Amino acid sequence: METWTVKTDDGEGHLELHTFRPETPGPGGSAAAGATTGAGSGVVVVHGTLVTDALYRPFARKLSRLLGRPVHCYNRRGRAGSSPQPADYSAATEVADLAAVLRETGASDVVAHSYGGFVALQAARSLPIRRMVTYDAAVSLSGNLSRRWRPELERSVAAGKLDEAWAHLVQGLETAGPVSRLPLGALRMLSIVSARTSLGAEMRELLPTAVAEMRAVLDADAEVADFTSITTPTLMLSGGWSPAYFAETGRQLAAAVPALTFAVVPGQLHEGPIRPGNRLALRAARFLLGGPGAASTATGRGIGSTTGTMAGGMPGIYGRIPRRIPGRTRRPGPDR
Image (cartoon, rainbow, N blue to C red; front, side, top):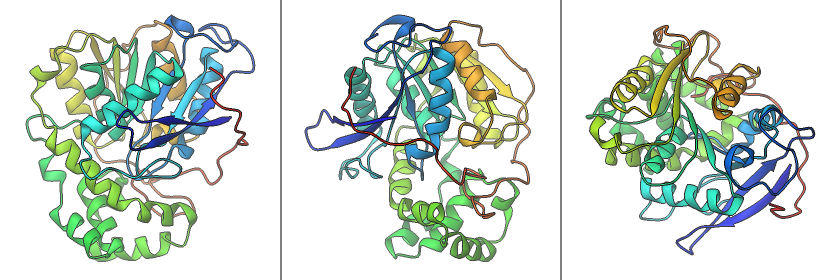
């Protein structure tokens, strides 16, 4: 793994980026460095909210091996080694940052999860992306995500009541499976316990960024027709055990935008890309290699399964998270 930095176009910040290169060529092209266009160029992974790119590194490593191409993960603003979110943070900030990462890495394709899927679809309306895969993209259509917003979340974060804020977030998004339906008091207690783990503590620290990101999603609320300008071949996936609203959004967009294809991945939770297993990496790789986007026509099954728990057995908005992130870090620079 290579660790390096990309400067943001606003001149005010930087983004921490991690690159994985295949040890042996995959079916998608050569493992040699330097490819910058077409099927042999790199892929950028855009992570979700309340997490860092560390959780996506195993997925990125698998994808790199499958494709025989470099895969780049970056920390969006407000976390890890990247700059804080600016005062005027919005969807435009994220689109500009993704554009900078694509330019500096020479990557042509994008794989994005949850809030990252929102960023990727916004970007595809204006950026020349070759192919794209999203999983449970958090896009607001005709105000459908407005009821997911809890004003109490923002007030709790401002007051420093992070356990209460976490409880409102989990209840509003419903991405933690049946845990999301627990009473607020029970969720607050779970937050207190989970904060004793390193990942739980990190999620609490990232709650202010989650408020800004949810605001960005609602501020960018759009109609289906606003996405018809997308020409990037895009596979929109949703987990069979993800909250149903992700699948509903995918179906609406795919029905109206010729470049978009939607499919449900049976048995997958909302946190699919950061869970063990190769299923999603294989699906993404097949599409990026030019394969068909069609897959299961099964409908989403609503709220997640009973395994939606955080490392150490505690619930998180992305379910059970790997205890250990493999791989060592070195800093040789981009070596594009």
